[in-house]
Length: 80
Image 1 (tube, rainbow, N blue to C red):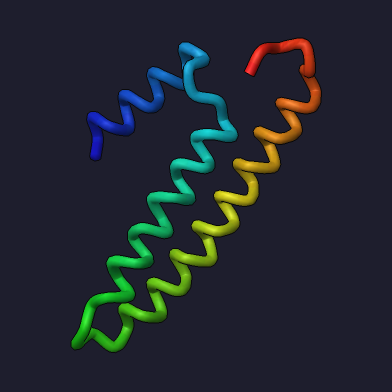
Image 2: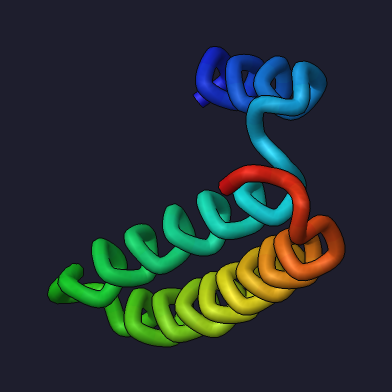
């Protein structure tokens, strides 16, 4: 996980990955983790932890999309 985090951090410092997209990627990863934890059988705490990750993941996705939509609407002359 360390090399991936370093790579994403480097992309953000170059401006290749904005804070909004970083939040979207984080939310997606949390939702995937929630899905994986939700499929675990035999552990009574896994569904509760999965629900927590899902809530945080949805919040991160919403924050990231809101930031990106604001950024896009603030600079209409910038090409998409």
